[in-house]
Length: 166
Figure 1 (tube, rainbow, N blue to C red):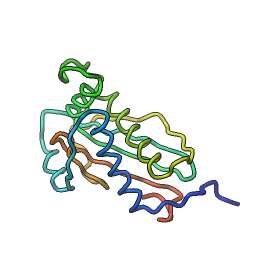
Figure 2: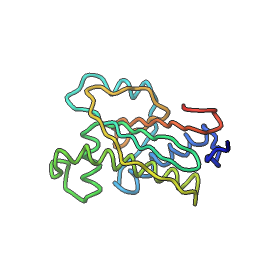
Figure 3: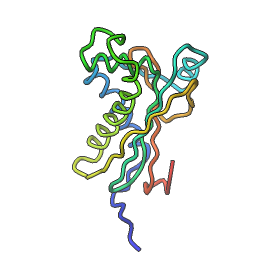
């Protein structure tokens, strides 16, 4: 039986490309500043707080399959949403918009990454699945600060050279 997976992406180059997309999307779409962050700094920033965290997952199918997951605070999602919509501040954006924007943000990051890395290859993206957390899982592949707020991303590939799910 032959596999429908025709591309065999290398995991580390995929992570590097996803990192570029994770920085590019908020810079271009939300006029945000991005800066490198690491796992310990992310974990330190996610301690007890008065805001919730959002994790959005986008599954994709194509020459290889996988999932991109992005975690950010709800206040960061609302701030980015306000900037993208041209609102004066996050209070001008409905409270529910943060949850919706987290899903759209993950969708934009995933789409940007797939386009940059794999050009004209066709991928189907599933609708985003977004969840709220009091304290997020701090394990990830990539960490970034967007307007000084920590953001985490994870990449899982199926049918890649790694031999399976990551």
